[in-house]
Image 1 (cartoon, rainbow, N blue to C red):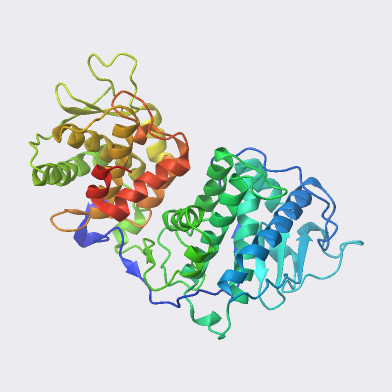
Image 2 (tube, helix red, strand yellow; image 1 turned 30 degrees about the vertical axis):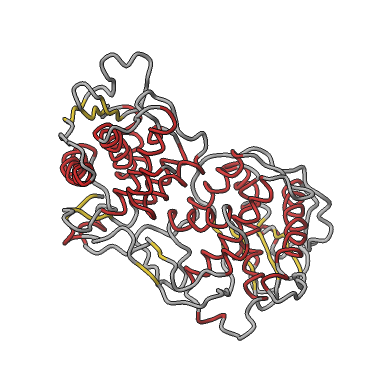
Length: 465
């Protein structure tokens, strides 16, 4: 929601926590809810007989393949983090069917789980017993159904990452690290592992770009409820923070994750006003367009003038998102047209549906990217093709980071950046050039470009991303 600064957040990126140079954890749980982008198959799986309580089915065969490849990966990646020490294997893995409580053949008790029904819909790492357990009856089938097999990979590799953290806890400082940062590091470790899966560098697991998008879809769905304080003892991070940590690992290595410390910045915030909380941080579609357009004009116009360009505010036209003489070029439900300069918005159809389904900054991201196209044109930069689409999307990220600063009349509500990454994972219109050519074919790349604008500002976007 775009709202007066006095009534909501003054900055999009505001929270830095002082933490340990190497983060450690006390375990966590994933819980399934919602739906997102599905990825392709990862593997046929392997014999899961080393898993306690397994039924030998396809879901546990997949889990077994993930765990065996995780053991091999960390056997190589752990020693450089631990002064050459070998990676101590986890003590065990437990597959659980919560519905079998008390029935004959239900299996042995699971460590750290007094009641097996408590694991329904979740997976967890227990540091006291050094085991990973998961619900095979609900969690794994729903992950595969909603996001593809790669969702199982990201969940189990995240939990395995907590085991890595425990092993690096040489000074017993595990309990002093903020939970949200521990979860960020585990997401980062999962990103490192998924990169190896994508690259075909592991014995059992394989996936393509669609599988990586599926894994990120799972992380987005497993975000904290909007408005959760980053200091909450159970905080795992919002969608933007979780995907950012995953991408840092995917594009980096295990040392990238292990070195997370006091410099880590989070966007997750509590609601700052009763009005913002009561609305869920969302404005209606027409209200958002009317409120946001002057601020977009202010910021993009200022950036153009700062670089010696001439800026004239585009007209805002509701109706059809088509440009005269554009032929078959389709920018999406929001388009910037050069002659005359106008941002044209189709306020019905997919835009209205996504505004209601995802939230108001799904619309805000599209508006900002089209103002980005207008700014590129004013600076004599390309607005078409992949180059134009990337720069426009990056500028949308730079604008989002600047909201609430300097002369801005608005701030971002807690869920706004989550809405950005959700819409970027779902579809490509925010990354299209004015000729309708998308800059990126995957949600991963679109989110990466948007994040480059948030972290690097407009200068990074104009240098090329």
